[in-house]
Length: 251
Ligand code: PEP
Image 1: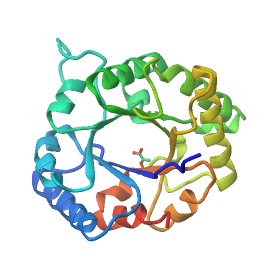
Image 2: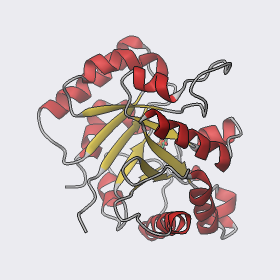
Image 3: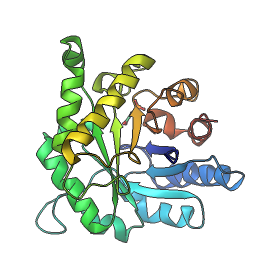
Image 4: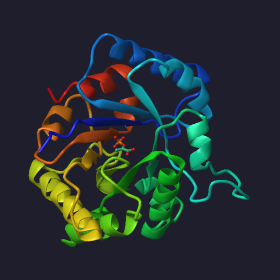
């Protein structure tokens, strides 16, 4: 099997005004101009910065992504952004089903799958997030929850080319706590089981990312875990230097 190329995703969340967003993006683009990290890099800034960052990343190895998209292409959905709008702003990727949207906006698997389908219809690759809560892990239900979320959050249009899955345990996001290597390996294997159940095979090329308190210090360990094909980074991606170190940590 051809080795899967690592994927590094920066999720800036709701952080960054115009000037500091441009400065951070320019610093990262400068790093990539100096050398290839051997993986694919996607930066997902707030929607207000997309057009500006498209110009900064033009000609660089960095792809642009949205942090969410609506299931509809257009219409009366105040405050939302659609897949075609993200493409118009220069995006090639979009995160869907992040736990902050599942919890904060009540998004369930069905809605996440509809959003991923809308992303695919617009020509975007979807980065679909799944992961258990602390209560679910403590109750011994982590793997069952992960499997169910994967099966339920993937639309029929998903292929390993247009989809990556990020395993992000909710209790590890922004907390400084991380699962051990054995738990990450088991969770990633379970993601693949979910894919196999959903599509009856064909998932060999699927990239499964780990997310949750990844830093420049722990990224190498995460990326060495069997079945980890990259990372989705929140807090540490707000430093161009730290994120670039993470992008190089698989070597
Ligand atoms: C995230 O936003 O998906 C995330 C993993 O955040 P952090 O790296 O800050 O835990």
